[in-house]
Image (cartoon, rainbow, N blue to C red; front, side):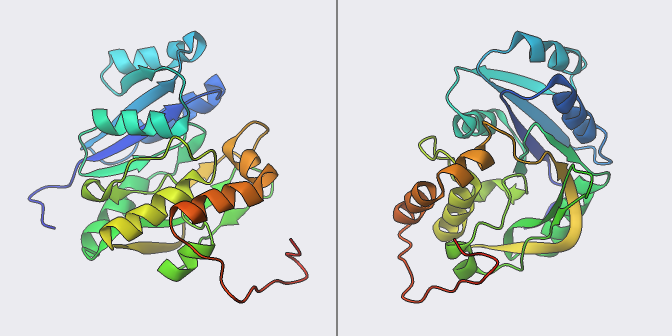
Length: 242
């Protein structure tokens, strides 16, 4: 894929039950990136007058675009944001994330340098005292069938988008990336241990909390939907008894 200029990057940011400070720092971290051709589409998953006061100044200055839908979940919000976006590259960036300086430039350069890849992904850091980093893993489609190791916030070329599934209650990023890979027969470029963004740790009522509380059901939904059969051999260890 060749571009006479840098490709446009769209950030779709679903907003639901996040604190004003979290939303403000997320937006600021995106609009402060050293990359000119990008847009931020904030999607309210249901009206939120309090958080609207945060987005209004940015919207009036033309720094972001705001969309509001009836409450239908994160997947519906992401789909609505995608429909309003124009970017050659899209990222579904959670509203409690903080983009590190230079993140967009790093992503674009990686995707342009690896035209055989449909998306790029890598590490992120939890906003905790220990600053725990999830480094992810080198791309392997077989491993993706059995492990959820690519976060929803990483970028992909627009032409490889597949609609997010509103019926998927959690493990939504796993279902999404599985279908991107299987539908378009593309691979991902692993950015390595370079941290792209910071993320809030799982909280009560969040998607990560739902998946951990309903693990068997949520995994079964994704595997059944994507035709992933249980392997004949199961490997476990003392540290992962479940």
